[in-house]
Picture (cartoon, rainbow, N blue to C red):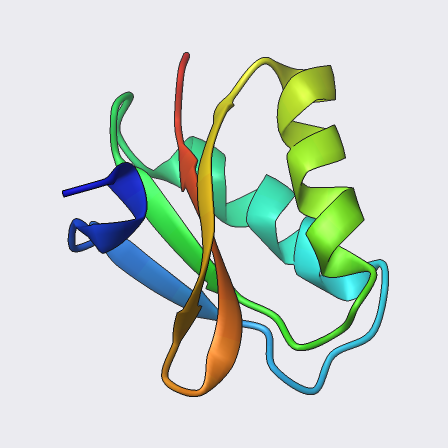
Length: 81
């Protein structure tokens, strides 16, 4: 089982929202979760495929996987600090 197959601690639905809203909502929600929690971001904006992993690198959080969930691209991020 890969990291993308595990159930996330929370799902953030950003479907229908355009760049930069999915990343902004991720940046607001992730600090509210405990360290080690996994947040799955549902985002159908094609820019999210680049923006979310880049944000994780810049903020030193763990980008775990890009998958398909609920008929939408999904991005799993683990809070690292």
